[in-house]
Image (cartoon, rainbow, N blue to C red):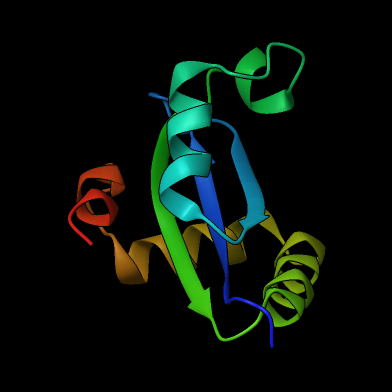
Length: 99
């Protein structure tokens, strides 16, 4: 049986752009975004280095399905998700780092 998966939303300082990603290792992936590991990536280009939302799912397959569902939804739906879980839009990296 495979590992679980996470979907997550990154944004920039001004919250103008939202990025939804999927990973099996949230902490490592968020660190890569923050350190700008992939210089050609969308997140690097738009300075998306603030983790504002994440969900942990039992399998990577479920995480991929959830990512597709969220990407198909409106921007407002993503904003509502973040506002419900993280109304101050704090960087959740530190929370994840405590696991």
